[in-house]
Image (tube, rainbow, N blue to C red; front, top):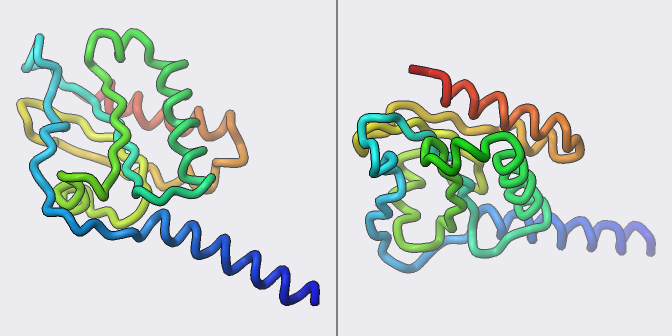
Length: 155
């Protein structure tokens, strides 16, 4: 009896997280325009931190978004204010999602850091370690902060 109950709970959890990462959109995507640099100084590079997610979200996906947002808010307030760093949660099921899935080669909830200049993405990195570091808030924040700093300081 306990085995059946445990197996049932496990199946529900797996399906919930799978739905969070693999839901599909029926709408035709439109251009998002979210990767543009800071408009006041178009020559200055802007670092974008995207958190791509689906409409159906699990607790883990919500936690990754909240922890990433907190790390950015705590460690980059001036860069956010002056437009050198932008935080952009984005639902892949919304219009423009297909373009992002193609541009960043993603199919699931993903934290991405991208450096842009004049509407062109120069480089990006998927921060895949956030899944492993979710139970370590300090390690999570340090990892996200270090990866963003690499993009902020790369001339």
